[in-house]
Length: 329
Image (tube, rainbow, N blue to C red):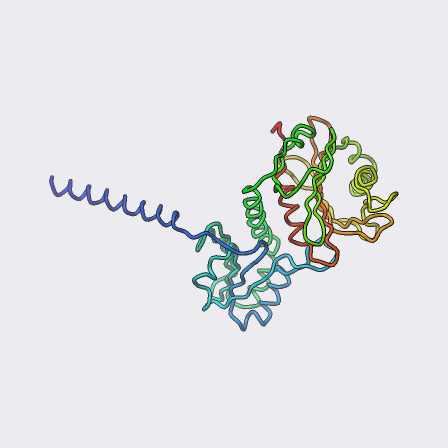
């Protein structure tokens, strides 16, 4: 009987020890690091310089839609497997390729070496098979990394959030955005926020329009362009009298119908310009349907930063707009 009791007690201690070790591992996992939209690529040097590297670059360094100049989705940092240790493992995102005797497959790796962290391991029997597999699953992989970066961007913003009471009171929505923005205009159905940056500015506008302003006999994209241009004329002037913001006429915006927190919505990316002036830049827009109030909430951001990169600025705007919530929800 004493032997049985001793065995049970010993088993109990082992269980406690195992659970403690697991908890300690979670607690002691180091914090991940890295710039926003920086992606480590773990692959042999020979493969990085060959067809596999070419395929990886074509996927993860593809141009961002809606920007006036060519900029990559991610800044890629190549690391050979033999060097993937220590600090190199702390980057928030990594993409690893392994060649073995299995059919092509992928595995998502969460918080393997740091927290938060997203890794994707793709393996396969041959270089051609793996390259084709990466191409076939490109959208899935990009989506996974992008969601990680959006979450990180919002985490950073949440450290110093701006009071969004004017948005709640005027439009019935909340928004997470930095204190670096200031309120430039507040009306019952239109709010404009601005942020000064080096060599330019970043702007956010939130407003409402009737449902039939977007859902009528014309194409949705034409209606959204007309709405943007009318709002620009009314609220967003250029540097001289008679000038105002419009949607650039030379290039049609990108548009996708999506679900935004369960609501019908449109995501629009394109380029704005100032009519009568040499000013232009990218914009990012959500048009979100509110059935209860029979209107659309238009949440938009745009960047003015001539002759400089704009990817990270428009990405910050996208993250901010994704945080929008209806106060009635």
